[in-house]
Amino acid sequence: MINGDWVPKLKEPLPEPPSLLPDMIWQYLFLKGVRTQVEIDRIFSPSLKKLTYPFKILNMQKLVDRLVVALDKGERICIYGDFDLDGTSGVVLLLKGLEGLGYKNLTYHQPKRISEGYGVNLPSIQKLADDGVNVIVTVDVGITDVLAAKKAKELGMDFIITDHHLAKDVLPEAYTIVNPNQPECQSGLGFLCGAGVGFYVIMALKIQLEKISGQTIAYNSKDLLGYFTIATLTDMVPLVKENRVLIKHGLMLLENSANPGIKALMDYLGMSGNKLTSSDIAIKFAPKLNALSRLELDLLPIDIYLAEDAKSAKKLIKRMIQINEKRINIQRNAEAEAEKQLASMGVGSFVLVSSKSFHKGVIGLVATKLSKKHNVPAFIGAVGADGKVTGSSRLPNGNRSSLLEALSYAKDSLIRFGGHAPAAGFLFDASNEEQFRDLLTQYFEKEKKVKLEKSQQTISYDVHGKLADLNEGFMKWYEQLGPFGNAFEIPVFKFENLQLDKIKELKGGHLKLTFKDDDLRTKIDALWFSPPEGHNLCAGYESKINKVSLLCEPQWNYFNGRKTLQVLVQEIQWDELKHV
Image (cartoon, rainbow, N blue to C red):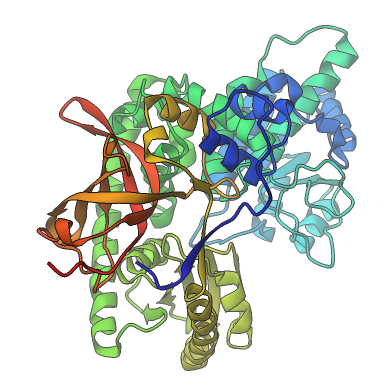
């Protein structure tokens, strides 16, 4: 319940749709810029035949020509990827893709998350040269690695960068750079993640090899879309255009993955053979893999990706479970200490906690936990023996702040920082912690004031409809509307003139509500998790509440073998309590 008005995001009149669509679906699509039947078909009938031509990416031809030479000469190629799931998925995607196109002399390298950190480091470049590598192809990394590119050139290796991150003022002196986010690139593919750029490299290389040989290559690059999907859904890039098309196909491949390691993990999670959503991959699947790189023990995510058979894959998953249990204990201890510190200092508009006992590998997870629990941005730091604090920050779900903006405001207290709006990392001297805290306080207090003024005025929603139109037929369209994610978020629905029929209080302060529409013919259950204090709703008040309006999200509820439609409540408005 809020004080302000609810306003639609869609300001212009809604025209008739080009084809037969439920009104609430058309509202959302029109809001997202969909206007034509071709664009509608791309949403509901995605075709891999209409992808952007890969050679539209700047420098793709030069990259492909060099890889063709490497194949002819049998040169040794190293795929160098970041340690996160975008980089890891990209490494495997390029390895599998190159193998499928006939390449044999391949190797790979990933820096360790804790001991080496992000980027291409000089010792690894020297080692690759000693190992006889001729060509280095980066994935999801490299665009800022000026020294590494220079070192590779000095050692006689061709350093090829494929990346999607924004460049700094000085570009590395690489053999070539393929990055759709270069200002000069006109491909329109800047929404791709690192593995996404790698996928386009394989498509372009296949086209070139077929052109040279005059023969069709049997290998189907579509087989790589499982890796593309995992990378895209975990790297917080926009789910628009080609990303949506490729993910829809990738999710179907993952449902019955041919990769032994992925299948073993899917089996363990009870996901194999089920219809998958973007949330399944981002929330259930990916964290299990991602946790492996946090402790730097004897198993990394890429080991599971590269498992050769079902038997070895099951052993790896068993070891993954053991490592995860160890990680949970380390994380639990860190969370307990963080809460102990917060108990003495209090929770304000953000939390900042650091300790010498925090493990660098779990600070991101601790930040996520604290941000959710206290519903404020969380900044967690591991104090090293050198007096440097390695930090990780997270926003709670639904928070529209930008951690990058906050860290930029506090940059005078930091050595470096980077990341995304909802998740970012930073480094500072322990002696500067109070300065860092003061600057964050200034930033969030200013932001809080702006948000308060805005919240007292309006809150926006995506779709306005009637409860009677929320039925099984609508849900078939709604399920096909996904995947949802960055830049294509789960729509917020507004329903009004409802009657509150039942209120049930659940454990944890949550509420289960039942609503009827204005003609009392349609009834639906609603869950309201963690309602704000002072909401005034409790069992027995049903008859005292006049008409109710909801902002919510529809979903299926599966319980005891039954499938029923329900909504998740985001906001509720109602008239004053009737005096009875």
